[in-house]
Length: 358
Image (cartoon, rainbow, N blue to C red; front, side):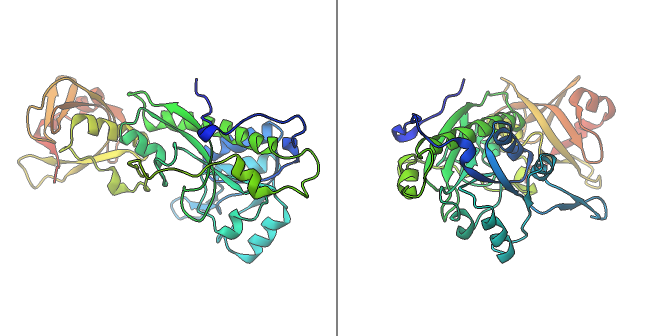
């Protein structure tokens, strides 16, 4: 069971006459499903969410004619919360409207980078829920990269926003174990729920440092500094979490079996890793693109060049730099996702192919 990491001995003791959580006016900012869980937790547990900021509706469909609201917007509208959808975060009308809600605090989960005029607006600041144990895995895709790198533990962090990306003062952290068999979906779901918990704990911590009624004489910067501490990274080898692109997801079979195994689960089920199947002899045969969703490690050494295949009845292996990796769930372009047994039943000429490695 995960526990809150109180870094730098930050106390979580609530004073007898602390401000009640429902008296803190909160603006919530987020877009995807990951953020919905935190918003839902705040709403269902009596926090005073006065408005929600999310991305503009996205055009979807073949002709981009239908506008799709974000998951956060859908939840907000269903619970009668005002929704703001700025195209530009510095737009004067948006800034005026945001200011009109008189937020004491802004909570950000899986949203875009904010300008100082936005994050500096509330007197209690703006904190972000980041899906990693900062200062590790700063960036847009921390969950993917933690799994890709074979981490056995990650977690969530709340920190106050500042001028740089994911560098602000840390408030709380909660760890989360990553089993060796877990894919990114498992970690995503776990951190989504843990993120909701740490968001509430962070608000409770802030409330515990405020007087019950009159805030006129409160030194807000001093209060916020008392519950947070700067990130210390000068003695650490930092891993980063840049945005994932299609080309990021191509499998490099020249790596070890363990690295390929972690790479596949770190991008499964979405966006999914891929590799190009090429005919070994007939160069006129059109290459095929295969997505790989699940693999299994074996204790067998490589029996050929990286990318070459080994077919054994209903099982399919790929040679890597140091061993055989078994493919379990795959999908050819234009076909449905399937297990390898079903794939081999319908694709009899697989032995005439190999994965491209250059």
